[in-house]
Amino acid sequence: MQTDYEIWSDGSCHNPGPGTTCTHIYQSGRLLKEITTFDPTTTNNRMEIIAVLLGLKWCPDQSRVRFYCDNDYVVCGFNDWMHKWVKIDMFGEQRWKNKKNLDLWQSMLFEHKRLKAKGIWVKAHIGIPNNEKCDLRASELLESFTGQAPRY
Image (cartoon, rainbow, N blue to C red; front, side, top):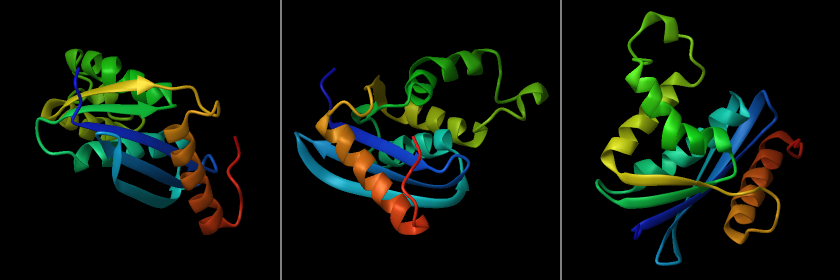
C-alpha cells in the first residue's frame, strides 16, 4: 500500500501513574508534525493507544496511513482484534462494559473507518531510528514532568 502518511509513536509511563506520549507524523520521509501529551494518572497501554490515536486523528479523511508502534497490544488490536470485538458486539453488550480502554478502542475503530490505515509492529530498543526518537522524546518528557526516568 502506498502511504500518504507514516506515523511513529511511543508512550512512556510509570505504570500505573504519570505517562507521556510522542507521535511523529511523516510525509515522503519529512517530519510534518510532533504531538506530545502528558497524563498524570494512566497506564502504559493507554499511553501507547493515545500516541497512535493522536497521529491518526491528525490525518485527513481517506488518507493512506501506516503507523509503526512497539506495542503489539495496539498493533494487533487495531489490525485484528477490534474487528472481532465488533462482530461479537463488544461495544453494545452489557458484559463488555468493563473492557479496558474501551473509550480509546471506540475512537480507534472510528479512525480505522475514516482512514485507510494499518499498524506495523516494530521491536523496541534495537536502534530503529524513528522508534528511538519517539521513545527518547516520550522518556525525556516523562522525566521532565516527574523527575524520574521511565521504568522498563
